[in-house]
Picture 1 (tube, rainbow, N blue to C red):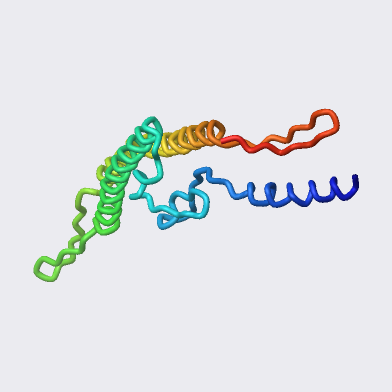
Picture 2: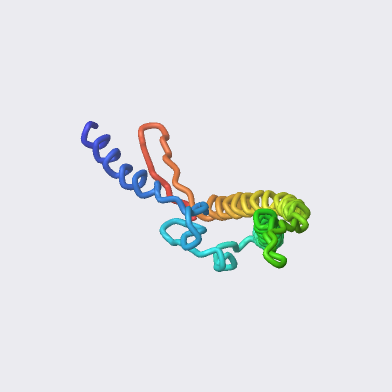
Amino acid sequence: MKKLLFSLILSIIPLISFAQNSDSLTLGKSNREFFIKGDQKFKFSEYKKVFTNTEALNYMKKANTNSTVSQIFAAIGGGLIGYGLVKEVTRNKTVYYNGVTVKKKEAGGWGFIGLGLGAVGIGIPFAVSSGKNLKKAIKTQNQADSNEASKTTSYRLDIRGNGVGLSYNF
């Protein structure tokens, strides 16, 4: 009996240790490894290879669109803020008329800074929405993959009477 139990435990250990390698989809830490599925790493531009579920693909397309819009508003806002700051710093000019020093003040750049902050403020909700849609896409894809995996394969330990069996259903 001890030998049977020992051999059963030794045969289950490889199943448990190799089952730890999950094929669920996760986010990477860089743009080169944006999506990680098992051992494979995908770039952001390869999202059509990663997402096979139509609902998850729709969430991903929304995330991509919202990200693009937020980046456009952030770039415009950053440019306006930078231009306004430069204009504000260099607004006092010294002008010489026939040897006389005259300080001339130009219009400041606070208007441009305000417009830039407004553009950045418009882009923030798009960026937040992009992140939420990206997380929804990953969650939906992982749920679809787990439903397909649970329907296709399963391991089961059958203990009946004085017998023990390991069944593999696919």
